[in-house]
Amino acid sequence: MNMLAARTAQASLAARIFESLEKTAGPDQARAVLCDAVDKAARCAGAAFACLAPQAPNLAHFATVLERWREGGALTIENVTLATDTLAFAVTHCAYARAYSDMGLDPELGFILSCSRDEPFAHGYSP
Image (tube, rainbow, N blue to C red; front, top):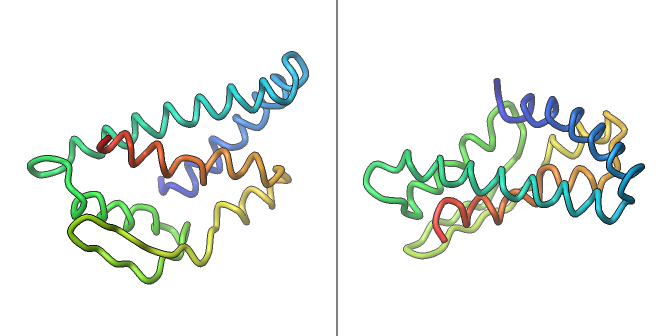
């Protein structure tokens, strides 16, 4: 299963959990709980990806994750620049945003479920 399909399936369940939390704990607490869960999951995914590095986690290996992120047309990533201590790129199309919109999800919820994963993933890979 590609990442877009996996995230879309997860989003459906996460949206239902979020709605239930909103009703019982309020929107701010629901958002905090979801953000915390997504952050922890992303850090764990980053740490798992680091374990795949041939020797030790490094930026060149980290950059290979871009191919996974592109799978199934999930992201269009352009202008990739890899230097000794910098990886830069531009996301010019995001199929996650389209999928979440098609599901009727609020854009903020979509941001929490996908975009907010990037930084904790990187920190999980290497602090």
